[in-house]
Every structure is written in structure tokens, then in C-alpha cells.
Length: 277
Image (cartoon, rainbow, N blue to C red):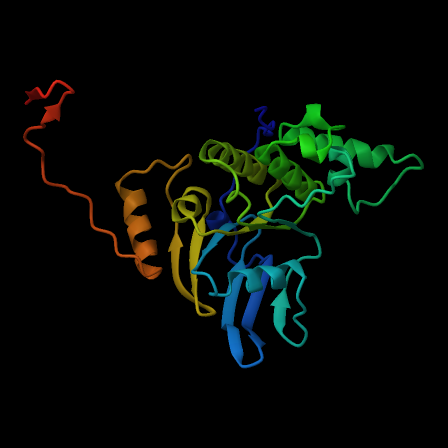
């Protein structure tokens, strides 16, 4: 897969930005209820410009409700919610229109600044080249693989140059190898465009691999927070596994600590029945 070109410039981590910088997302005392059911309960949340945040939580914890609010899909009238106007969402399903070619799917909703739409096509083409699909401009969505469809959805989000990129389990429906490639692509594009990102996922390893900060949502409240200071690309070393155990514990999953006692000998059984020490 062709990889996007990254400009030769220093990458400043969100933790290194000024403490006085205005957050991209801010919620103060946000509450969402449906009838008597309180889904989000007096929630405070900030996301800094360029920060990558992952949100974990069991089904029904309020993750989707929160994401829909930040995306502007659900109203937040009368509540203290601040989000940028430039927002984009990538869902688990690529949601491509089958009757429109790939570049036209990417260009959906863009304003035409030229009489023949050349500007729009050029922008769509540039976005598709960034995600490695410059050769699929005129393809029909039905001919795309699952990974290509999700890359198209990502291009459609990025062509809008969002200040806030919302990812709703976008890799859940692809195979393991494609998921790893998508992780690399998302990180590359994030460094290039620097939106604030909120990733909703059920995958703890994915959250640790990608995010600057991982939040655990439980019954509408932030139950835990982990700041991930591991260098990228992140390897599953002892520090990674320690964070993983803590997050799983907050999610109600107990995991045994890895065996640290030295192994003095190993027994290897061969098909013949022979055992070698």
C-alpha cells in the first residue's frame, strides 16, 4: 500500500503545547438522558488541539452517545459543549454510495469553487492519493476491498480538513493485517494534518497503540484515564502490558501478571515422541 508523504517538520506532542491553549473539545457537566435512563452523567472532558484520545467502555456505557454529540448528530441545546465547526466522522461501516464513483464519494458535500467542478475533483484526488488510493479514483465502491472502502471513508473525512476527527470503531470490520496497516496510515495522516482525534474502540491494544490518552467510560462517567508516553511505534513490552492490565481491570477484566520466574529448562516434544531437554 502506498504511504502518504509526510512533510519534513517537527512533530510537537500535545503534552508539549501551552497549558493556556484553547481546547478543541470541551464539555462541562454534560448530561444526556433518554426518559429516566441517564446515559451520560455530569461528564467533564477536554481534548487539546492535535491530541489523540481513545475511548473504551462496555456496550451501553455511553460511548456512541458521546461521539454523536461531538459530531453534531445529536443536539446539545442548553449544555456547555464546545466543538469546532470543522468536524468529520469515520464509522465502522464505510457508508459509501454505490452509485457514485470513489472520487465522488470522497467529494460529497464539498463546495464547488469552479464552474466544472475541477477544484473538487483535485481535492478528492489529493485525499485519495494520501490514503494510497490514487489509482482507484474512478472505481465503483462495489469493487473495493474492505480496507480500501475504509481508506476511502478516511479520505472523505480528511478532505474536509477537520479540526476534530471522530473515529467510531473504524477498523472493527477488517482483518487483522489490514487493521495494522490502517493503524500505520491513521498515525501518518494524524501527524500530517494534526486534527484532534477521538477514537471509540473496544480493542484495548488498539487504544494503547494509537492514543496519547486512553479514557474508560463507565455508566456515563470517566472511570479511568491513562496517559500513554510510550514512544511510537509501540511494542508489546512490559510497560505496554502493564498499561493493558490496568485498563482491562478498569473494564472489569482480571488478567494474571506474566510469569517472571526464570525457566531453567524447556521440554520440546517432536512428532516421533522424542523429548529434548
